[in-house]
Image (cartoon, rainbow, N blue to C red):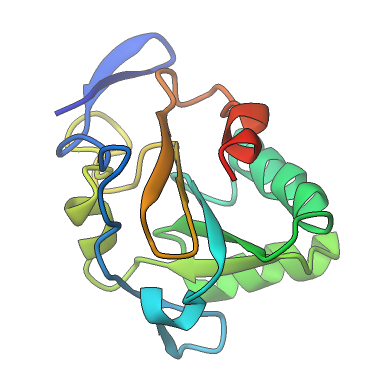
Length: 165
């Protein structure tokens, strides 16, 4: 269980992020067209998983914008923006912002991605949502970098995530 904060107040996650060197667990997440995506959909690609509580908060929106900008220059890399938001909200946000370099995926149905990867917030006002975290994996699905952002209101370390590719 990771201890993080929300506005300086302690909250906790359901576990720990996957360890560097481990294989990322397969997942089933909902795409904007309501189809299901799994890890195999991205086989042979490096992945940056930008995970956050909700697209409708300032810091979460900023992370999607910044990774969208970076993604346009990344070779053989896909940025997955993952939250428990409905796919409609994710699509609306990226459409309104003109963001086309990231892939939105929703864990709204069961939250299994968050539970499997130790991301589910288990107490406090955001209980049930995902914590802010970054997971980077190589072309074979092996984890090369993780970051559990200690204060949910803070942005992740973009440079460290991109350097791990």
